[in-house]
Length: 510
Image 1: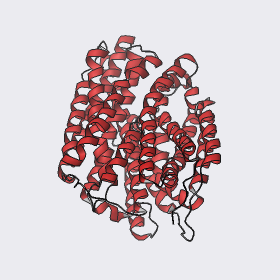
Image 2: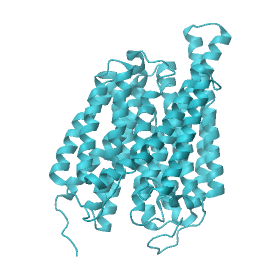
Image 3: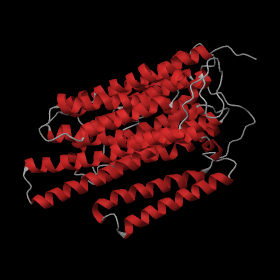
């Protein structure tokens, strides 16, 4: 029995779009403000990465649970709770007077983002039931997400430079307020009666605790050394918790991550590629932000503008290249050149020095890194989410987002620790702390850490070559089989790929 479409559904899309915009903004807007916030609150170089990882850990670790809560509480209610909580956490972060307050606020933002992000996409899917309308809605959703990354860079720079860095967090309050009003007025919940969903709380605690232990161990290695008892204990604890997570997921009928979804080699390969490439993306945003502001003397606003070529490159790679070629050439033939271009761009960026020119030494690297990652993200996401049916679609989507956030969390902790160690060793070996030599030491740390990003992206390329299928999509397929891509999967992936440009980077990004 067909139901009459809600005449207010396009207003509802505006509310959903604002929710997504807020999450994407928070992934980039804080990046530009981080150097100023670090100086204002007296945050050490070793601890600065927690401003990013507190958010990404909570977000990534709880995304699967957040999606399940939407089924239990109702997606509209979950969206509103997530928006309200995100607004309160953002206000608390804007009022932070200490490093601890800021970290708590960022973690709470991640918790509530894990509620609202899957609820927003689910509301879009149930609000627009006509395939053509849903495609249009997904296009709008993806455009908001992709454009939100650029808006975040510009807005973050403007607020930090002309108002106060605290407003990069507080700006979420009015956005959330408008989105809440729109959700209440224009969105309707669509719940299926008689279906009961139980929550896999043990699984959520185990996976979040495991990743947190590993990230904490990586961060402490900067002070205690890689072979210290604390660091090794954290690594062992993290590994044990993750093994326990797998064992729990094998036995529970309400698993956060049904392990049968990982039997497909192409899906496992695509998820691995996504996780590894986040190391390259997060490293660039962290280190180049400090390089441009701290070494080159760029203002926050100028720094935000300086990153825009990367966003342009991503959109070109994802929508202009991969979306058009994927049905004809298959995912592997896009992911391998994409990762190789990205690795080459990162290698180019390792050559920057204190007096390097932005136009000669930074801009080309950013542009081609964005191009390569855009070519990689879109087929990776299409492969990871393709060929699933029923309720597994939501689980796979949440798993993909979790992989992005967790990969970024581990990567940023590792890279920051390596950079801090190299910087400290350079200063100790040269025995001088002049401003010029401190800048040189910082650049040495940045470029050394970026070589790890190069290695991670090359490993992603190798993973794609070994595990990911090269089979193109057959025309006329309504839905692919296990591991195959259907046209609908590709269309949806274009929107998701655009969302990942922040969510990315989604989200990504320090």
